[in-house]
Amino acid sequence: MQPKKILVVGSSNTDMVIKTNNFPAPGETILGGRFLMNAGGKGANQAVAAVRLGGLVTFVGKIGDDIFGKQAVQQLEDEGINVDFVAVDPENPSGVAMITVDRKGENSIVVAPGSNGTLNPADFDKSLTELDESEFVLMQLEIPIPTVEHIARMATQKHKKVVLNPAPAAQLPDELLKNLYIITPNETEAELLTGIKVTDQQSALKAATQLHEKGVEVVIITMGAAGAFLFVNGSSEIIPAPKVEAVDTTAAGDTFNGALVVALSEGKTIQESITFANKAAAISVTRIGAQASVPYRKEIAN
Image (cartoon, rainbow, N blue to C red; front, side):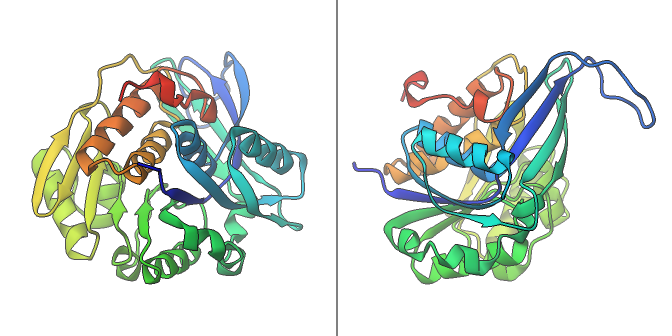
């Protein structure tokens, strides 16, 4: 089957990463190890994941008029992503993220959104021709929530399938939830959205049921090494993830979401798509970096 076009709307950041044994305590200075500077941002990461895994991708975002933004867009273009609808903010810098990764592969991140925080509905509306040609719209929450609401509403009116990765965690209006085809929170994000602490399959079902009752057709709660919890058509199941040794979890969720939408765009079932996404995310956590850790299609057995 010919894959359908995917429209990814979201953030583009430059990630500055330091590897260290332990995270510093408040007021403490520690010596770290290796330093890396990578292209990142949840939106850009998911666009890269989707294109590397076989998707036809257009990215809509906003950068500053600076070297970080120009490099980020060039890298996306080099990946084969359509960047015709990336706007430039003349007043704010491009987004940056300061990331510390400890010896267990866990990360601690502070993001300065910069131009990502000024992506507005008018910026998106310049890409409506692309929306018309796309079947899936993939978004995250590193851009303003009113913009996310506008896009979800426009896409739903045009009978497009909206997939929202609600990260970083935030409370969302019911008006947005009813315009979503799929939502993909992790346990922390699911708890913030529903007030239900997600620790196992039973609590995941309660949280997913609440989101479904607010209008989301399919709920996928990612649960790290345990895999992904799926709630669809009144039934639920855990789809397990491959067992790997994690080195850096920075873009695991982004890889999962990009892979999920690619598989769906190719006509795979939701269960097959999650299995594919789990495989891609498992590979990404064995590597350091955000976009640098995203695998290519040939690395994943279908």
